[in-house]
Length: 323
Image (cartoon, rainbow, N blue to C red; front, side, top):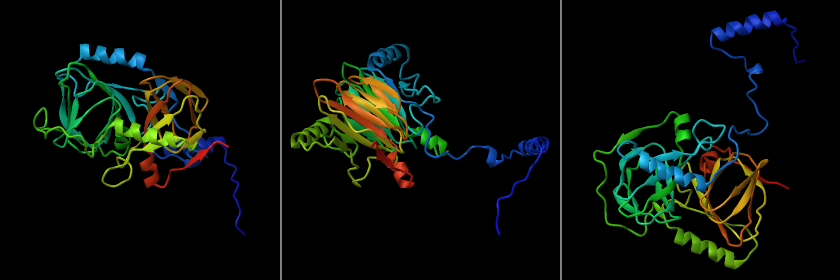
């Protein structure tokens, strides 16, 4: 008959044994506490307010030029993580002033730009000029050449979202400078596989709202070639909250960062109450219940990006609603 064994070792014997293991860079798993019943994120819910971010972005433009910084970027940092907003994704605020360019390069990390302020600047992706206007989503998939330029008379400011923490964790990061500061590019276009104008998304959201089905109004940005997520590691959504609307509390196995395109309200994330307003950014850690409330008298639009495609590809994704 098989049975569990009970060996009564003395504390001294165990201490000696564990010291020998440490000297050989070996760790006994039974004292490591490596198994969790459910995900326990190191990140915490947090909101970055635009009223604080914009002055700092403008100050950065006064103190640091694009010749000194490859990208003039403010990295939003979770209070409990080292320089990143969530475990696998970064959220940055980037500013390009009138007449400036941000030099061309490419890297293993996939990136998105959600335009916050300014109109008329552009990103060049693999030789194609992609226009930028508030609320637009612009993609620079991994290992695609890209540079930014602002030939208007006002600042261009946007939210960057990248999967660089994931790439770094997998030790798969490459980076390359372009052979000149900027790419030669084709004439401006209105439709691009890398460009999702807010005007189109807003119209689609309004059509759903007019149907008045009572369902939550959420759209996913789809890859124009595959019909799947916009990029293999990042999914993007936009949600409309009607005045007074409250969503059901849900949690998902994915990190999610939100940007308030417009509107005012609050989100309950785990045990934290996060108030938000126009252009704020907030983060929801993995497997943490989250619900949104529109406390204003106008519709609120929330843009979000997450690492859900990675979790789904690895068969690790799950979601549930609070009963």
